Length: 421
Image (tube, rainbow, N blue to C red; front, side, top):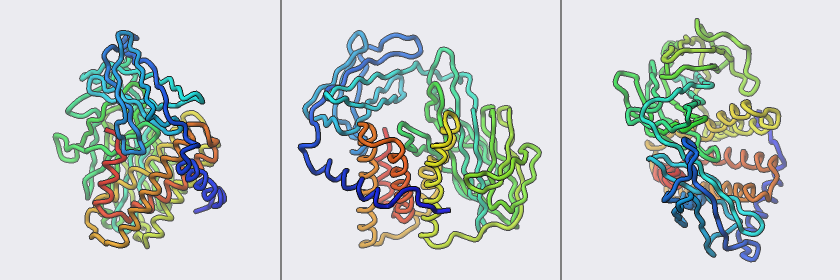
């Protein structure tokens, strides 16, 4: 698979352009004005005295300015320190829930940025899982499991759901390691989430607020594949409209009274099984048997696998629209976020290697900055959508490969710097 989707010289030219923008102050427009309004989407009224924070993602969500709304919910942020060619996020924390909006400046250095917040409720509103995807990959003596859920909060009037006892409940039938979790944040960046133990064995939950509309939650864990057999028996606390099970290697035998065979998945080559209209806490049951794939080889092979997974996405994005596009974004988030999160325990066990780690740290830092610069260019309409996505996938694939070799100190540093608060 591992096919280049665009000429390598494109990255060289693009990198040169990014360097030119960053090194020539005369090309950067400094000073800008941001104005807008904060409104309550639950009752339709403006929100007075709401504190706002202007954040710079490239600076690890560094706060660069603040504002407070007036009686009509309006605000203004004006500063000569604002670089209108940079990308910012505006944040409002309302009833313990963070809401964000991207800031986009026009040619005059002006930006209109509105934020809609919602009343919070501790009582569960009508919530369904619009789509679920479970990916099982048997390798060596383990099965790697990734589970992704597109959760729809359809409260009327719209409200954000908060609950210290968990907004999303998950039961895992069998694991050999604690699960990791992430949520798709703004700009499709994975936000790692603490996974809390529930009331019974195999019960887990996260406390991430479920805002009105769609929230994508992802879990990953490993389980033993003893005697080349596995019984999947996971469940979630919400009804599921449609569920998809992807199994690899495709030679494995799957026995399930719930999931029905649906051929081969065109993107991954895995065997696909589907189920629909499942009630809350329905057991996502399936039995696997057969010969697993050989254990992971060299780190370069693992990096190549991650690169293949990510690079296959742009073609799909060009072909699909609407909900299908969102589904492939889930795969992207799994490839960049949950797959990396799954490797955290391995990274924590590695020893520090001085010279190699310094070079790796410089590489990771360069890739993060390149991603931020590329997003800046796209946000200010200086690069077309198609080449933007292609170059972004390439950078993310290289970042995944680099992070797979990262020591704990470096990984924790970037988690802190690149996770919104």
